[in-house]
Image (cartoon, rainbow, N blue to C red; front, side, top):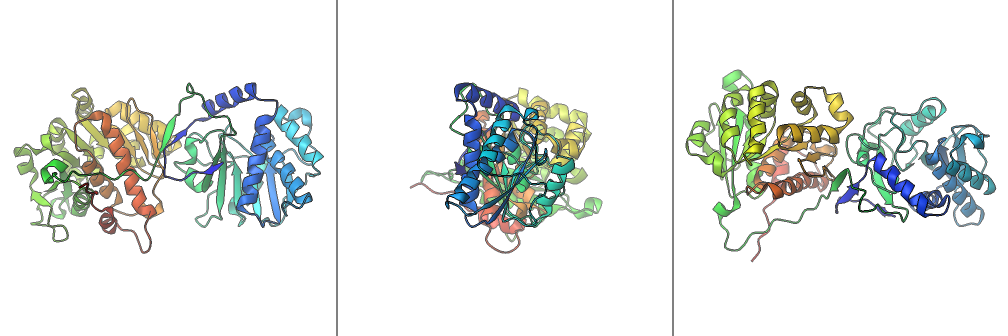
Length: 511
């Protein structure tokens, strides 16, 4: 058993593949061995996390997830009786105080018998207060929150003040998608832990997963997947190796980034110059050798906070032929003014990051979408960075549908548009055709502030330094991870986009 940290890649398996792994293990092991291992793992983790808990409430469902809880209850009761632990177990079951064994799955029936033999008695109601709640109601097969008695228990668990340990997945969380169908999660949640069994599931790390799960632990129950059981996604580590530079390198060898965006307030009455400036500053701090900033409308003469930026007009940039040799970051604060420039940018840019208003323009204009798709056939690299609403516009759907299955949405966008898709949000999803999707392990709610997406766009631009499509996806995943890691290491004060840029830091130098 180990705690999952954002320091190494982890394979993630959907519910169908997890079931396949479970069936294979059950065929190889003695009867009930997996449930024995799962119950013992839950009991051990509960005791390790809360060794001084006096009252433990275990809420069990009618299936094998409840069986895991029953086996854990038996262990905790035995340890309490022999003086190895002091917890008093309060056990409730979805089928009441006298479940009919004939209505339980075989493993759960066995687990109930073990609990009764250990002297645990089922009670109708949970205790008034518990030092720890073990949620063993619903497992990976559930797609919706429970109703009835278990629904009342889930309300109480979610709105209560007791720490929670969920068995495999929190009840109400879709293991594949991370969608939450339980009661609203309060901002001041008590400590939450999830022990994922057999496999790690993608839904634990994206959408509502990170809030619902809290700290994630993992036990493969000594039954690892076989080579034929492929992950549906990877958890992308948050600590990529730092970029290195040869002593003989110079600014021209570190790649050029060209940022086009930042609609001037005088054009339409809506000024968004800051978005492009943030992206350009981020690209420079992320290691780009030279950064050119082409603002839309009346440009600034220079950036006093970052005088290293080289200012150009969009017309001058296009005349000089720089899109072919630079990584272009387009759309940050572009407004409506960016649309007329997009056909040429889409045609000429060898490496292109499309963000914000550039994506909205593509969603609104089928001819721009066709030009974007044509880039893949020409071997050009494109990265799109939609948030859920922008993704919904590109897919012709709504935000709820995108959030209902973020992995699927990112994969479809990548395939339809021929681009690397970075679907932003809690557990940012990176998808590219021919690649297993990645879910970013880093980042937190401090990034929920204006401009941090522009910083990410600039960092992505700096990461794309060659026309090698094979390495582009890896570089994108590293840039996203680095962006989130900066927020994870934030020590004090409000995180703003401008302050975030100052933390990016230069690449390491190799002598």
